[in-house]
Image (cartoon, rainbow, N blue to C red):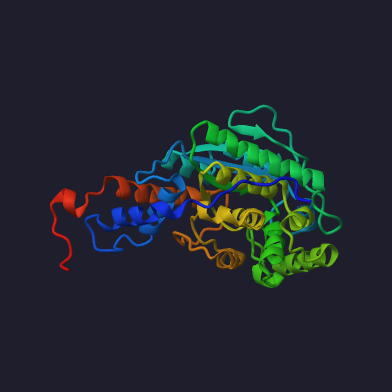
Length: 348
């Protein structure tokens, strides 16, 4: 039984012809602004207006630890998770730099870090547990933990919407979470496991061989679960589960979702299998260097805005793509039409 249902409606398409007409009559050849044109139409349809607005853009960075990290699925020790959260809170990480540059708010969410941060500005303590169990030996999450993480994520998105935010970017931090993302991608896309395993934080060849063997062992124990909630229970991280809940809640609230790289898209795979209409609210920021990300994007029929060879995570790609989203809205709202500018249109 599913823990809850999500009321995500596909945007009403009745406004599409008017939006397309508004785009096509700008002072440019038809289609000359390329990918910005369907992006502007998408945002207009989400907001059901010919003049969309981006209000209080915000990045949510979810952090959590993974029990399997100590088995060697990552090049870095588990302590790096909480140390990087401290870096976020101090304003020194790449996502801090980019969010500041783009004028985006930033909140770090402790979904399940094996560390006590105390009450800190810029940090939401949503800890469900101090990390997951080791999926090499048992399911990563209990059903109760999974459902609590999904519900808390939904609540966080609703809180942002209540504060006037209508565009939210998703990021993550968790040593070992590329391995969890590989397992979820294997389960939910049908791709073979080896195809969706990458170097993560920088594994060498020996580390990659070890990671492949460990993840094969995990699947031998837990199975290839096609149901999103079962897959999340077996292999998911608390940050991935909470992020999936936040995505679902954001789409329910009619927000625009900025989707980052491999780990964030693994959360979206879960959310999409629960409520496929979420896809209409998603902007895919970039294509990660992690090989499994291309598999995820193909499965979702998604075309990312840019390819910058990123593989950092944290939501950095989502933040970097935000100016393109702004550009799409701005040309729709501010660019002259042939008629208003007194410019002759194309000869019939």
